[in-house]
Image (cartoon, rainbow, N blue to C red; front, side, top):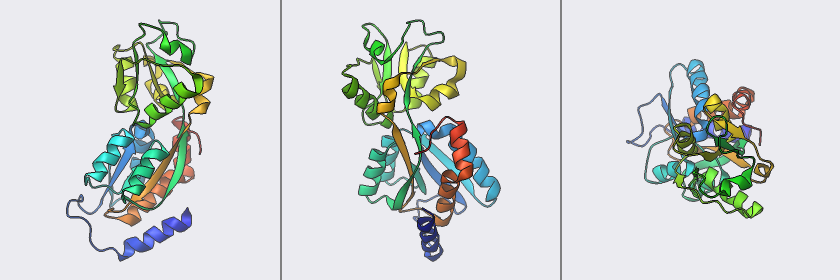
Length: 248
């Protein structure tokens, strides 16, 4: 990993121009999965303190939406996905420079309205008729993990809505538009007493690994590599751990 970062820095030193559509010099644009909002916002502030000449701009969305934006030419320097599948899409499309680095893992949990009024005890209960369940769409990492759980458990879910990001799922539950949803444990922790979390053992069968990479059209690869080094280093691991993420 460190060798790759050094190589990126060398390439950056040789690069004197960037895409005309790229933000002004001194701006580092990071595209990151919606579930990373809390820790990456913290890490962006830390990065700016350590690199006074650089401003970090963060764009959070479902990983599949971020890949689509990048594929359509959206300017960015760093991409952090909530799963390997969407990072692979970015690599196969020629959007990534170098090799992605895995930096965190996350698992799903059930969230309900406060107090769990429907008495949900486990994953199978989510198939209860009349339950207003919300999940992520299949192309989104949390949705792909949900599909893996359905296959491994034999439980067929009938959600009333499939959302484009895990934060949208959480929002449907906290706003009272749904009885329950499947989100990451980190999102449930962020929501606090706005929801009741219901862990279930089958979640261990659908762990998502988060990779991060410098993008091919990065305007400042040196800064991009430095941000990735922060995320994957001891300081970044501590911030991610405090947010509920596990190590890959």
